[in-house]
Length: 444
Image (cartoon, rainbow, N blue to C red; front, side, top):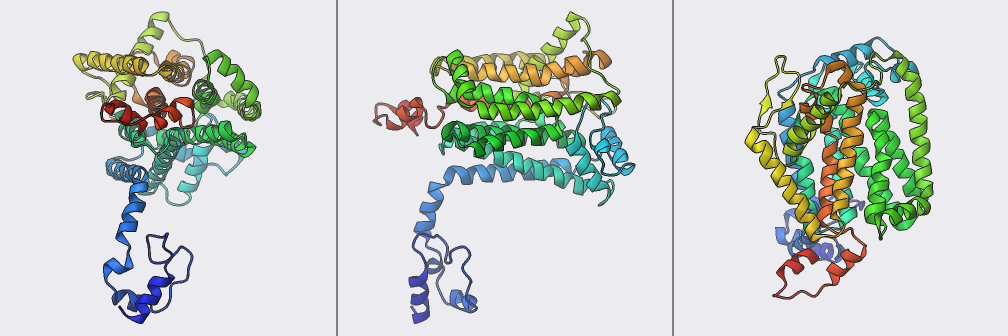
């Protein structure tokens, strides 16, 4: 080896898998030096392999995210703007960037974040689908990365976190929502807010540092700017905190959570209270007003369709078949009867299996059911069912797309112990022997 190459080897820090540390100025003759060295001398492959093995779960998660983004980008290439999108862009064309414009409510939704992005797009390139799709893909990437980060925060770096991540990445019931631009730009920021606010809440519960409580409130506000369903997010944070971050009976843990973490709840109440006050004023311009639902028969028909025919089949990979729509604007779930009932059986088996194997798993499913009821069923019952009727509303997958992040989180909570709690520590410290393969897998 030449004198120059030896000098280079001596200068390279042993802890780095690459020739130069970040931020160090690369010498001018680097290309000549590297060209004279063998590849094995430039990259310490054993050290790089060790580095990759230590980050295998994260790297695998990033690969899965990259594949999903490519897949959904190809999916978006087959679409264009739809009816509601044109209304949003027309509103942006005819208004300045004012408070009245941002808080305009046309059909029951106050979505200043969507209006702000639309205002920028129409002044950049009107009806430019590739540009609008790029916004969707960026939001998708942010939601995916936030999901991976939260799962690692909750459950540690175990390979099992890739299971709920895949549930979130490939769920079919999010596809129609993604392909409708204005709907995607409402729903995806809410999904980001769910993951990021909960991540901040977990850190706050573990450290009591107020900056994490401020972060949770800020992400709540971010979600509200794009979708009013985020008003339910504090209840989700409280439910998960009391059920899985504070030990003991749920009722006692709920009381302790309210007392111990009151600064976080106070901040979130202030954010939601301010949003509701603005929404009440803005609703005066809405063509759709909250109202009492129709007949009880119609209500139960809607709930049955949304849960049995839309969400449950979608949660396990369905609906496998779509109801034909005359204008091709909407995606209605229409699973075959046999697969519909089979999906219910599988869902019951999964829930029962988790409850049989873990003491507090049932709490995760209660939280998921509560989200479906409060965020997906109740708003439609109060806002749209009296106007459009219950016939097919329960089959529209857009209404449950925001439940997929909660599903992924609850799958993890039902099957894996939260990092740092007693069950997690006990499993990590459990003796590993050839006669305990199941326990060994759980401890990993």
